[in-house]
Image 1 (cartoon, rainbow, N blue to C red):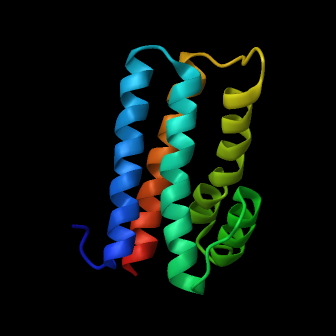
Image 2: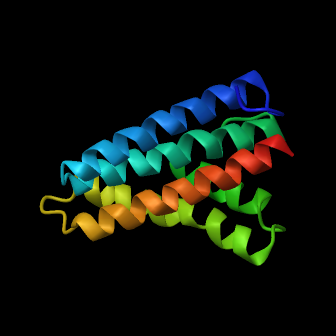
Length: 130
């Protein structure tokens, strides 16, 4: 269990780690759209846990989650604020990967998406423990 986080947050962090592991596996299989999908959901689980911990509410939409998460993290350091801002870009990428008829993502795009997700999850782990 992650030290210093609630059981619910620990569960979200575990789900995020599972999504990251799936993303790494699909990256090795050169499945960029699936990797992008997994990376976004790793971010989603921890962002939702953070928002719930801070507000006691669960946003009903992805856009609502992104907006509230950004508001709650606006006072972070510039580097952390930039990392927090990756959630919106990841959502847009995930929508394109999941729904575009001919997604235009390659291995490099998927690798960058997974790197973003790993940095975002690490930030949220730290925020959830504080």
